[in-house]
Length: 250
Image (cartoon, rainbow, N blue to C red; front, side, top):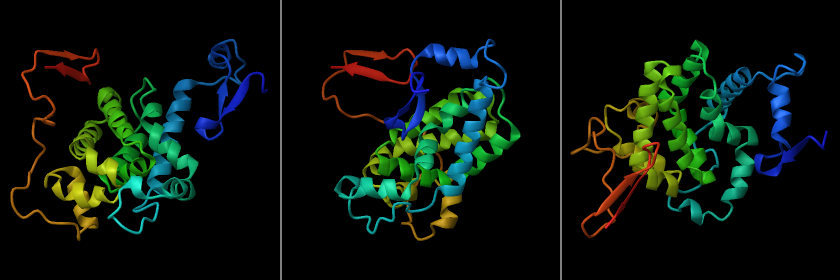
């Protein structure tokens, strides 16, 4: 079948079709039922498997880093640790779970919502960020959470609330999360608002993190972030069509 399919080395040997007509055939009505692929069902199943994989395989300090005093970029064997301690199936799940879940046009099942609740409400969302940090893929967390929020009609309201809370956490602490995986717990978590769902769960598990005794936020501020960069008056500003990006000039 090499004339039709090939293994993509960028996807750890995942199988790809050489031409879109092959996909159209296997997903179309002309394909025999025994071989036909129901994309909606396939994405639902893959999304479920991704959640199950993350829930069972994610863990604290997954790459067994010995110190928090070194940035990810300063760990010479980090890529080897990633390959050794984070199986390909877990890497794939951490990167693509939301793509599969949001590719279905149907309301998410109770089972999927329960998996999402377990993943987003508990400590595993921090372990997920840890994996993305050592892989250098933290922006993927923003895309994944925004996708869940965008397709809110597919999920229960509590799932959207958890996704919004996790997104605020990532946006607020993007720099420390991206720079050093241990600092998810050392430099980000202690400053999360005391009423945030991430803190309410994590404080029970990470009781030894630094305590902020004064001036700590209770809730996320309405303004997500204040950007600094221009030193002169801003003369122009434009938004991307999807409203997710903004550019300004001075």
